[in-house]
Length: 314
Image (cartoon, rainbow, N blue to C red):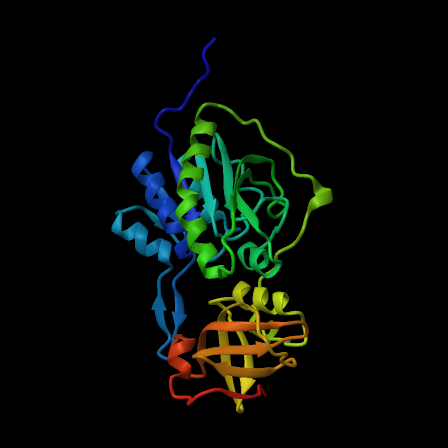
């Protein structure tokens, strides 16, 4: 007896930020997307001008139907989704869906998550991956359930992390890899293959959102931890410290092998490079952002210095 396989699925795509845009484009190109769900436009800047989410901008270019619910729990929003009679919800970097919405698609609702679940459940898996110095990560698709990032795994791809990259760099890697993972997962559901791997709850780790107040640099920690922290919160919210009574962000760092020892927070400018001492070893700053200035390479920052200088940050 043959399976009832859907050949032209009705897909609703849900997402908000830039990282989801290539996946939306790929899914729409392959299968077509009947609607895009994203956040409402948000006031930004001093003028408080309404700024649409990146997904909305992309959806408008594709002339797709767009829904921007203020309340995901509203009856009107639920009815608008049911009226679409979708086969699949594809969710990437969006809010937690209420339980009553998850069964609406005939074939399932799946989420794309940039970690090797059950590791790093939460809003900031990319940041925590770099902060913790992992050398491997991946992308997971899973059937959604009410508990956050806890559903059965449909597909998982692992890949190595290049040394000394930032969270921004890893974000771009995930953004480029996610479309293929999404397309394979959709095909799996279309072939009525719902074989899943349950997540091992004994291996769960959390990846909560990171805020600016948590990003002051502690140079008393070992150099490798300081380096990973700087890279892990770059570019947003950005690791910061006080230097000459002003705030400066360090956005890219690597370990340094110096012939001399620097105490924590001591800095050395030598051979057009900026070194900072930590609790064990030192780091080299590659990219930074002075207060009220643009992001610049460290070489541009120190071009005004003459010869070798040293001092103390703070």
